[in-house]
Image (cartoon, rainbow, N blue to C red; front, top):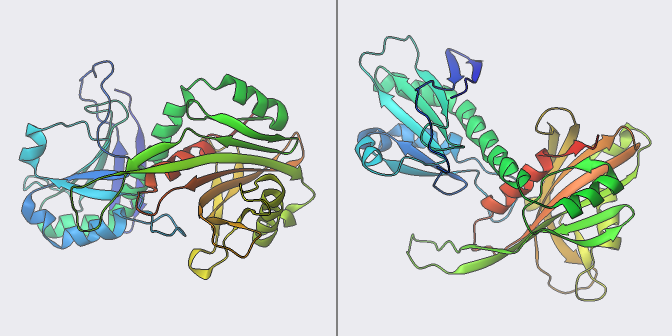
Length: 356
């Protein structure tokens, strides 16, 4: 296995995230199991039933804002070490919490291992000499652990989509926008203008999530895709939050009509789901930009209309002198989890590169 190291210093603790050299070679075709958006926590039952679980819930079950219904980055599933050893070990995200009386460190230890039992797997071990030290390590270090799981989640999808054959669409995106990006297999270009493309992903079904933990399930259909648009870049004031929203609404009004004449896609500005944003880079740090997340709905007529979530990445193309936006959307029933399709959108946004 390859070696990856990362040192993170946080208050009293030093976290060394490193890929373990076990000498074990993975079998070809061995893939991860578990849901996207799930972390398997392996620890003794008394640890799981303690205040440590509150820390896990607080730091690992973070929400992607500002969506409604709430979209958690992860959900936690527990197994004891014995149950883990006797079962399938290929969970995509696995966290071990261990008390080792022989451990002599002044503070708890956090280590990262990749591709341990399956390709694309991330395993993080938190080791402490006693319960108090384990709790301290979780309280001070789980935010870094969350970031490791979070980054791996969209990286996996980006790698998977990168293997899909979408050369016809990709060549059109390359020619029109000067961009490279990954797309899921069987994507379709359903809207094409000089400064605006809309690409639709294959519709998919996810299990409906019923409250109360019942076992009954049905399927909820999810519609998703991305829009790519561009306009002349004049100066940095165009990156002001209100300016980006105004440009977005103008582009959508004229390019994304509803099946009902007179209606079009627009941004929701209700204070509960008011758009949020922050600075980010693409996956390899070559394109700095600004991402924005929020909700959309179809406007134009005084009647009820469905809507969903959007996630956008804005940046300047240095050769074209254009302000570019790649914006993903997810239209799904509120009874299904949005985590998976939003992760897919996130992976596509982070994959963007300039064409050579």
